[in-house]
Image: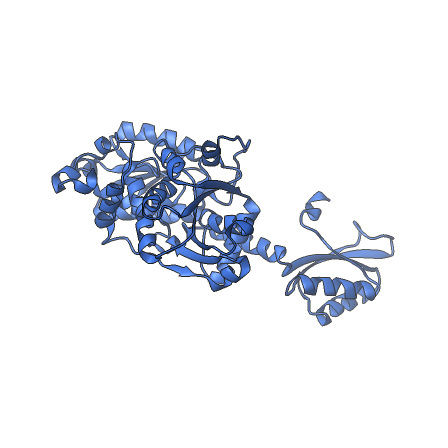
Length: 429
């Protein structure tokens, strides 16, 4: 086992090491020693607000606070440090939707290794540019992770590069497993651990550690409804998921790893799926309450907690926030949609007489009722119950649902025909 190898043996080729399919506790302990100087210990803190909201004692593990903003640094660095000199000279290649890419590029640059990264065409620009900063060669290939992987495997053979898989690699899994050792050091007791799952490297390595150290711990993995392959393999039930665009591209993987799946089956208690809407809301909640930025995949664990409050009520729960590399345009959309869901941004349609001054009277009334108009559309030719009426659509900033209901009630009492435009109604017209 690597934890007992001499320095010379540790220098054996990465390819030879990866003929092994198992990962051991000794591998994880050795990885912790190997990467300790260059990987920060991330905070694990109690959230008083989330605890009050959920009825559980919620602790957040901030893996989004690594230098490249995700847990992927743990496994990437461990794998790179185990390369032979010949492999270092030729360079490495990896396929990634972003976080493994940044970790490989950053630590590859630090170690002086030529690094090539293959990313799916759909990768958010923020992750592409953040990877390019570290000097890696970036190739955008394939519509999804699996197509990018197929291209990467061919490229590695053609160029003689060492492929460092983002999750199905014993050294990567061992590096990710150091999260479990870190949690065991930070908290003397907790009842539940919730971890997002793509290919299963983080959950596989972490569950291996904590199943040994905390046998009574309940461990749950979380996937997206559109990418539920690990859940299906774990439960043996088909969910008929149809892969597509997702807010959580970091865990948009069609199949768990050959090495990771046995770890999940042996050490994980349960697996669940969450919706796109639930994850969007979790990103919004973490930013508003904890003032921390997470990407969709990073917030999936909180989404699972919020979706299953009875399961966790009264229990001490650790939620791993796996990453924070979110595209700014996506984050902007998530925030806007979150404001709509919480009724702090609302759309109304109001019919008014098609007479001079009627629009001014309406806007004055809305202002006196506390609504701040941010957008207004005047539909004279396309709406209105009669030719003498016109319809106004307004976007308003409000304080929440109670204020929206009060404003609508007051407008209708004034004689206006006012109603909220429900989500999706505009598109249906």
